[in-house]
Length: 416
Image (cartoon, rainbow, N blue to C red; front, side, top):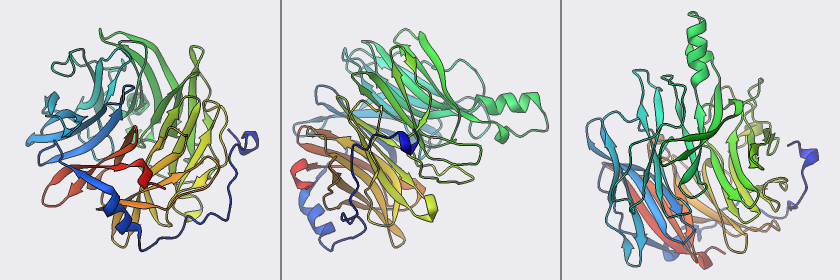
């Protein structure tokens, strides 16, 4: 979507100064934030959050059971804190990675669906997407389903799941099958010379696959995907990859039974010969859409957000969110009044902080609030955020002697 085609729904005001920090930042967050006792035990990581249509919040995470053996567990937010953890799956052949993490979703009929990654070969990045359903509130889970039928021992990950019709889920993932085909067709070629694609399929509880599709045949290899539902259908955001290594954010939409062509969300012009491992986040509320992302175009690190009022057909001029030195790792939600709250990691000396900022579609912005100090290394993973009524809920991986999943909540009114 070239800039000349954008409907400028949001005017960016240079008078908004998003590059400043205040000494009250941490003080404000400490008074507003309520720590929650995490249901995850020690040696836990890769938290993810989901707010169901009925308002219930689900937390999922990975626990290390023994060397090379892991479990995916989940818990729900109750009146007095998190419920007792339930097991989704466990295995000794999983692909566990700081950036490519599992998820849990709730379908329109109340069925739970989760995904995780299982190794499919001896190579480092040979792994498959596994999807399982539960029709009894997570007490038991069906046999895992693989949504891709290529059978190649290559990367299949960075998944977005969207509740679809009744017992069906839309799965979108990054797919490395072209790496395998390249290597098989030319013994002199390395698998690294193949291209990663963006693919999708609709999966039901019986393991049937529908509408299998290639959405883009050339995308960034290891950035998270983001997705949301609007009245018109689905919208997916991802980091694209042009022939000259421009890696800006692109979108595709599923409407009237088919996928649209890929369109660039905004031409940042970030050319980088490698994957930044920093994907976009999508939030929807009716026809309102917000997409947040990270870029280092022109050697300047920025976190941006852009709004759409027509289900993602057009987007406004991006608004800068960060405080001047971000690492990215973004998450975004839309409140009931369609204000966005963006979560990201900001570099602080040799470490980092998880921060949030409220951005209004009009372009005005609130002060940034520090949720928690964190580690700047990869092992700290990606902080997650959802909201329920008037509360924001956060989850992140804290590094000390061990990795531990921590959680907290904050009243929306504290985010001015």
